[in-house]
Image 1 (cartoon, helix red, strand yellow):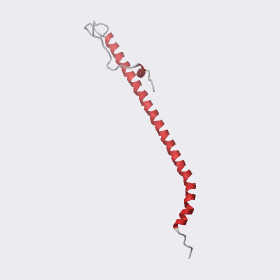
Image 2 (cartoon, helix red, strand yellow):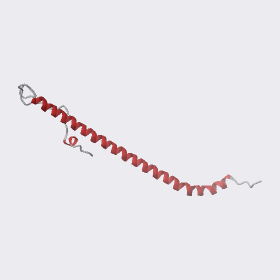
Image 3 (cartoon, one colour):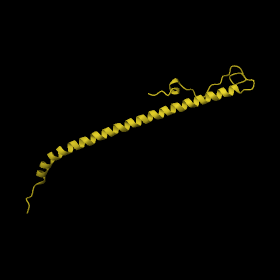
Image 4 (cartoon, one colour):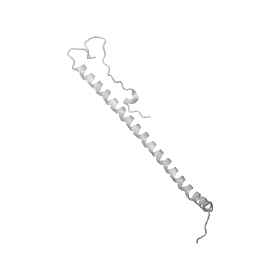
Length: 108
């Protein structure tokens, strides 16, 4: 019959060994997790900036198209003055106005 070793003695021997082996392992897992989280955050921020830039470009294109459409209408009028309307004092303005930052594709 093998000798019986009390469980607390096994714990006294295994605990320091487990601490020495598991501490670097757990530290590596935490370090890798933080690194992955930072990379995901960076990728999400870049994607958000790309979407913002795309939205600014589309807004600038829409404004340019509206301005071009307004100029086309004013040149094709039948006897009307340059604003495209028959009455005095009226002016045609686009519904969407671009700011200097959005038209130039300004980023943060």
